[in-house]
Length: 243
Image (cartoon, rainbow, N blue to C red; front, side):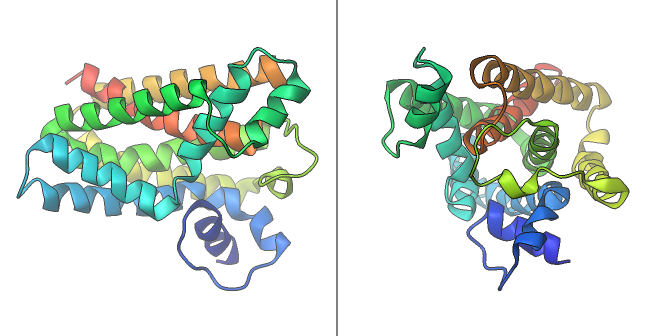
């Protein structure tokens, strides 16, 4: 379970105790499970908030809860990725821009629009929103783990450099189980909406990876964060389109 603790530390602000580099190498197998826990927390916030306020406020509070738990890790990656990839500069310079802690116009616009889309979609989903809040964080982090494994990781040093090894059969089984558990609630709502959500997730996450592949030749930690955020939004929009 040290890999699970490493994934928790890597993806959230929650404590996990003392861990080694070897523990973090096993962490990607547990990305989906951590996403499932984050999704459950966000769903509970949504359910509690909607007892007091309209759906849009409940959705906003659920999104805020996720950002607080993760420290905005993936949202930061989204902004950095759009700043770097959208700059039009050569790959080496784009990577430098992505390392810059300051946010540029491309990143600010992308982050604002994606957060607005996420809140609007959740508010429109109504009673289905809690199921989407459980599924989307898990599935998008599974896709992130698979993108990390597929690589190539283009930085010589970075958050993901020690996590690019094969997951193995046990690791893939843990990822698959997290995904199935995340989707369980949606199967009782609409199988077609669930499938549309998966299409939306893979479409937006895939486009982000393709963009990074063409511009940088691979992925970075920031790109993986962007894949997660866009995948989550894509899933929500896909489900909403078929309800």
